Length: 171
Image (cartoon, rainbow, N blue to C red; front, side, top):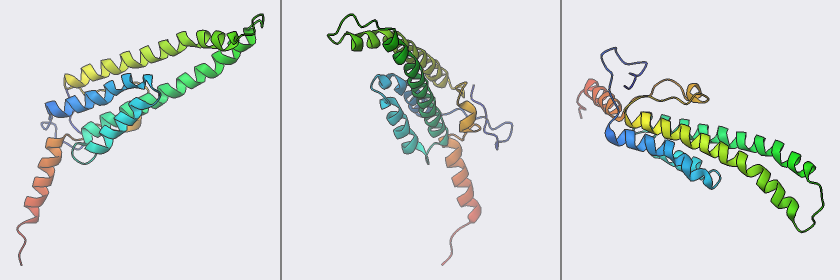
């Protein structure tokens, strides 16, 4: 169940709409597009920028997804920075027909697959929780994004409330 925003009253728990949950789940599932490096980050940032004013909750989930993907991309770069030199140094040099490149690639491939699978499975878990209406936080980046944001219904209600408090405009 979704957590109410920090500025809401205790009885004001509002679940995000089905459309909001679908957009947030798409942002998390965009990680599977990262088979082309950083393509999923661009998709999540697109969802973030499109929903920034209309639904802070969706944009917060999309931002969390983008940060999560960036962290995993950097993790992959660190792993490759360790694996590639080790595999190049371990190469015995008996073959000269480009086998060094093949040996390095085959040494790095299992690490690349494992990093992408772990990232994708964690994102799929996040998307499933979002679709159920839970306020999901990734373990590594969830706190960086901030407290629970307001849903589109809460934004609309707040703007209606502020316009009604302002009263009619007189000429």
